[in-house]
Image (tube, rainbow, N blue to C red; front, side):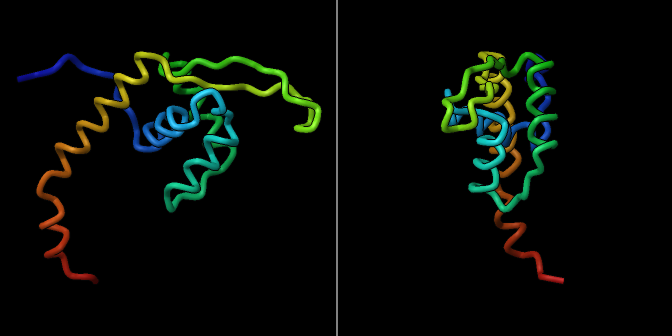
Length: 115
């Protein structure tokens, strides 16, 4: 049975969306970067995080707003991100695809011999 095509997410886009979901109202670009680094083995450049957030916003999967930062945090306005309903749907679809592809792969990987 064919499904209607969904927004295709790259693996890093999915990580960014999941980080924004986890961070909720505290999802700034630097917080997203920190969240991904804390939960994965990836080092994430500032540029990669912000370019991906911009791309997700262009796709309508996240929205952003500018908020004033407290003086003790430098006082500079900060951008906060939130996942849209379309972003939640795209994340759910991508995660479902990964689960379906993962089914049975552990046994294959266990048989693989290290090089």
